[in-house]
Length: 264
Length: 264
Image (cartoon, rainbow over all chains, first blue to last red; front, side):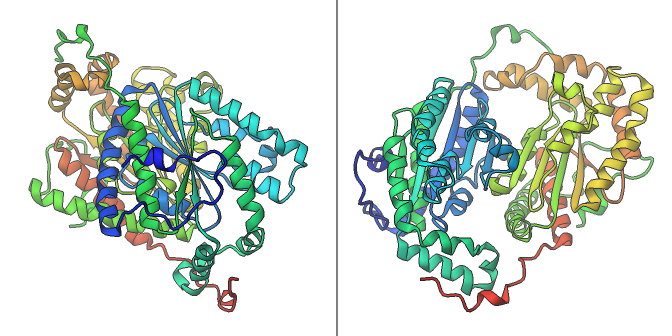
């Protein structure tokens, strides 16, 4: 199956199914995930050796949609030396004193690296819009600014993949409740999540706009059905592997004039 | 076996054996490494959940001593979300305009994180001394400055482990030669490594001084016999696991007043 084609954001589509598994059963998905995780490690070492292009993976989703879990399960086999995760929280005073892409630009992966954004500049058209942190006039022009920014990165060798981990409102309830009920998960609970949950519909509208306005060829959005964690992990891993296989990074060419050197 | 006690730098000792395996055979070491890699992933997730303390792992060693390989094999199971590798290269113009610890301080891991330094501030008493990049008056006072800096970190919850990956001069020759002979390894070859190799004795003296002058209780040096890659990996993994087990990070206490909240 080509996950890239199946899950890329379709223009205008809004009734995404959070339960979909594309016909996969759990055991089969786990086997395939393991295979993809191993393949990812191989491809990463080539990307690093080549040193010409970078991969930027953006994870977005409502609270408890599984951004952290995806990183833990999909990226657990990669070499941390050339993989950098940046978690974007509420902006600091210094960050707010700059345009919204300033802190994002600083965190873009270097050539040869895989960068993972846990939340991203899309928060600036999600929470910033829903919570009215800035006037509509400001957030409305950000879609075009984001597209221009991502085009700059793409033109400089950064392959961008954007994942919207899509869960249903019921699934979020169950997951937040388990953070309350399970003492070992209490530390993950943030009372602020309940306030955001009340704005569910506004957030879904904002997500749909972000996906539709910023779904470009060089920086596609994938809407990943994420109610089933095992399917979410498989889908993200598969799309990353499919993308890297298409990039097909190569070890640098052997250097002819090295062949006569003898180390003493 | 307690690797921490076995391999911690002994005062005054200079005749380190790069071939030592402490009685381990390769197959046995591999099994034990796998076990430690899995255990490390568990302990890391606790360290992250606790969010109070950090682990800083410093890797030093001659060219081809296996710093990259150690990261690849020992840290391959960790969650990249709370693990950050910083590779220190020749300082930039901006870095040189500050004291030598300025760029290091910026890269120190946050509470809950594991930070890995691939090379470090020790280069400033290694290459800076051997290559006379600064006068003796300057590098000679750095040992005390490093000790004060590391004491500051330790007092703020950063556990520091420093590994000198110790290979023999013959082993380095074989490894550098294989980078020349194997076309797939050509990209790892740096002609500058041959020039450094000629200063082998000077570097060994500088390493011995760094280990002896900066081997503190809160930031110990470990001299890891690294001619056998499988032993090197096991030793580093075991010492990290032993250290984290001693730290014994705990999930934060359940929060009593959460127990009555129901998510709707």
